[in-house]
Image (cartoon, rainbow, N blue to C red; front, top):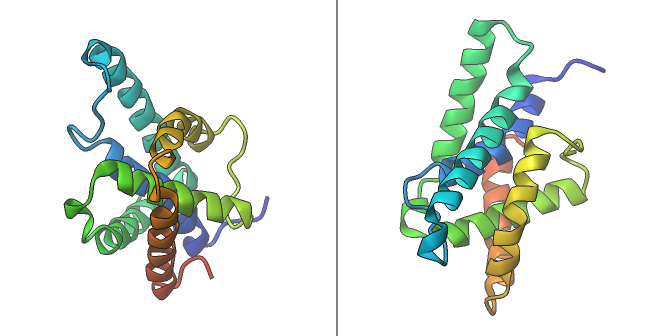
Amino acid sequence: MPALTDRQRIELAIPAYLVYAIASAPGAFVPADPALAARAEADIAGLCEKLRIACLEPFADLIPSKRQALMRRLERIKRLATADWHERPALSLMLMLWCFLKDLTDREVLVLWEGSAMDHATRMLLPMFEHGFRERGSEAVAHEQAGVLLDGLRAEGLYR
């Protein structure tokens, strides 16, 4: 396997890092049935762990100083991409990220290897996305927002 460039490593980590930013926020996900709160909490903890692993995998083979430098770059890009997210509902953001991720995987810009941490995380998220897309018009809005996100990341020299 050829060595990855710094840009490729960042591109691999961004989807998991952005989803992790939402999934790990307190109260971002509330189960429809309060009786399921304990199970939902455990599921979210499992999801966050898979996403955390997926965020770090692209940097695992680097020396610590290089890893830290790329993680700082990743954090800077996340701050730019998420600047206006505090005003938007978590479901809307997750649907946008799903469309973003789907676009990248459909175009084979990003490959989710079966059994990888990100593959497991997306499988855990799929039921929520299916529920969110049932709302009228949410898919069109999510696709539009995903395009805006991609344009912003391209302005940073990513996903060309």
